[in-house]
Amino acid sequence: MSEFLAELVGTAILILFGAGVCANVNLRGSYAKDSGWIVIALGWGLAVVMGVYAVGSITGAHLNPAVTIGLAVDGAFDWGKVPMYILAQMLGAMLGALIVWLHFMPHFKAEEDPGTKLGVFSTGPAYPNYVANLMSEIIGTMILVMGLLFIGANKFTDGLNPLIVGALIVAIGLSLGGTTGYAINPARDLGPRLAHAILPIPGKGPSNWAYAIVPVIGPIAGGMLGATLYHLLFKGEIEMIGWVSIIVTILTIVLGFIMNKTVLRGQQSKLL
Image 1: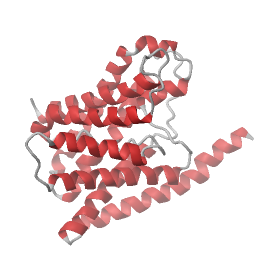
Image 2 (image 1 turned 30 degrees about the vertical axis):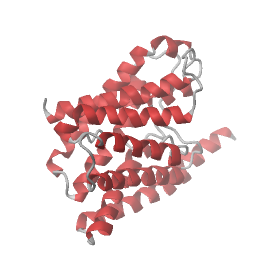
Image 3 (image 1 turned 90 degrees about the vertical axis):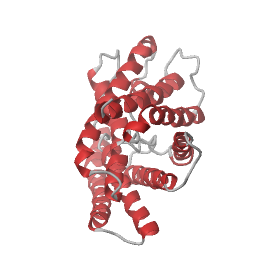
Image 4 (image 1 turned 60 degrees about the horizontal axis):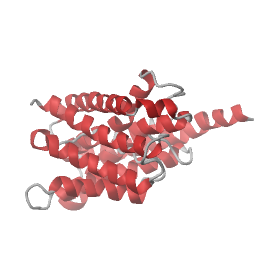
């Protein structure tokens, strides 16, 4: 299997189980309906475990553009492969979302709330505030990338690494995920959001593109920052790409302030 196909398949598995648990817990008629946040966090953690076991021996199972970019910032991954990995992850995420839709098709038809349908595919904020929402995604993804580098620096019994990585995802979800739904992965959000926009889902409503920038640029900035902090704290140095990462993070937060004054103010004015 090629690296491109491996990242595609691994990300499709991630979304199949991850978006699948969101559908299982939230869509009308599911036996698992209303089983709660802990089930969702565990489902996403196990989704990562399955994706890593599937293709980790081929690509390291990034399954996430923010991880790919973060590892490149750390110097642990070739920048030349970054575009190929990201394209594979995006296509895999869309494929996984398509399979979830096919699996839960009668439940999507029975569900009346468009927001619940969108929530199967993509994330959204508990409180709309671009600065706060971007900060949540930056912090969550920073911890993700630093955690992956922490795990990589330790030795575990052969075969246990995917379980430890899954536990990291569960920890992020349980501790930090309630603010934005912890996308912490641009492909995880953008790929299924595109699928939601394209698929003929009955009564689906809009795909909330006004928010879609947050789970894309927030995780990218967070991944870069996490790799930079790890490099600084554990290797005692910061390279030029590290300063670029810090600048990207600052500009991302500045963009949040700008969008609060334009997008949110515009939305509020429409309600008056």
